[in-house]
Length: 317
Image (tube, rainbow, N blue to C red; front, side, top):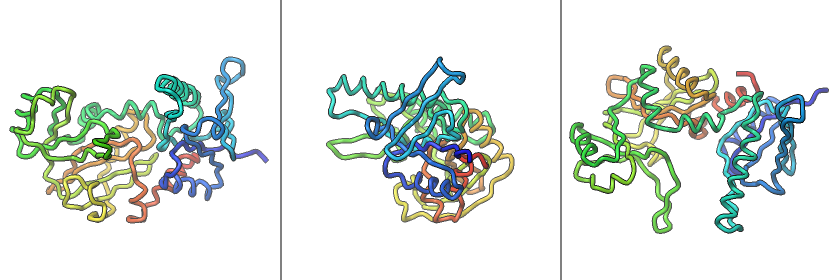
């Protein structure tokens, strides 16, 4: 009997969302090789050969319990892997070793053309720029709030003064600590008098506030679309998950086509979209997270999101 082709799952050690997908893959009798790049060494080895075989790349990825031939991989679920930092090495040695892992392990996997990627890291990197997302969304006919990206304090004050309410939000989430305390960049309102010359240090994203009644989180997995209305009364609903209520909603066909076109534009197989719903029921673009969280929504809605990921990875979606 021919051995079934495996799915590679690259993620951190404690990832409940990945566990959900792996459970569904087990139900489909699809073998899984799970690994974390941070485990490189005795707990993770990669070996790839180029230029000496009929196919462009051959080799394997091996963990203490599983081995996957690179030629046989059917799909890669690039969930939330952690790259090694090598704290036992000196600063420059650690930086050198970390780069070799990223471009050696990562590059060998990126060289594979056969597997389905959910999502390919290079495509995720391209899609992860919010200003580019805003322009792409508008080109596809989605409604985008007035937005300014600038490090000019005068431009920022003028923009904020020209709208009833304006928020500031980060252009990209980044681990951040102050005095040893981890901080999160919540979406917050900002006033003109709060803008000072420190804005010149880096571009900031300012956006007119949508007079919303709810947020809409939309998960697209292959050709399956799951849309959930999230009610909270909060400007940033992530601040208090206990205050949230959920409702499954249907989306207009043309709207769904625009979402699919957005993912196709960036070569993504999946993505989590965020929209604000105003009092007229219109949806306003906020952002795409190519690798957004969705696991907490499944038990609240009954939507078969993990099964959709498993089907996509198994080649059934």
